[in-house]
Image 1: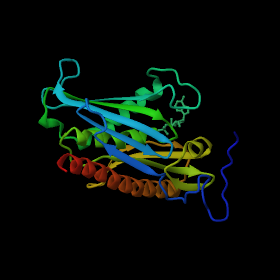
Image 2: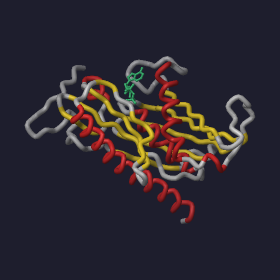
Image 3: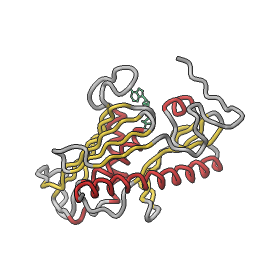
Length: 239
Ligand code: ADP
């Protein structure tokens, strides 16, 4: 299939979105019985499950911290999540994304409340359509809240970038592949603190500023959806 990214007169993107529009987003908290916390997220064609265990005692001395909990993340793409069957198991990309996910979530958690403990986060990409690292962080943050882990804020994540000469929010897989740049970020909306910022490709300083502003606005919208998912879950338990 050949996909042409057109810059048509009304400035709509190939999937009909305007430049600052997120893909359709759905988040549900507490979808798994056995994990301590969980969330299911869809954004565009991405389908993602996040599950959390902990805080629980950590017996691995090498990584245990006497003064705080450690957070361990595993990002995994299912073999059936992409067009061509993906070889199961970790690869360089998933190891990198697991690490940056833990880095993005860590500053939001009151880790010092749980010395000698671990919080384990599992992110399973069931279907991928671009932007899975951000969607995984967003889902994991809801799963952490669902597990009752005390946090300063829900970390919200999305990317902006440049495709077909335009700076745009929340790149689809085609825009990511064909485009000029991708800028995934994660923020804690209350403080405005940025806990993840990566960039792939080329943008001018002006385009970078515009993309960063767009991504921050996108994260704020995502943050509202996260809060609603937690509220819906809370209401369910008490209704
Ligand atoms: P992100 O998912 O965070 O955008 P990348 O920038 O590495 O990460 O983009 C990878 C995208 O490419 C995925 O979201 C997915 O839609 C697509 N893709 C297709 N095949 C694969 C594969 N074998 N491994 C990883 N991504 C793939």
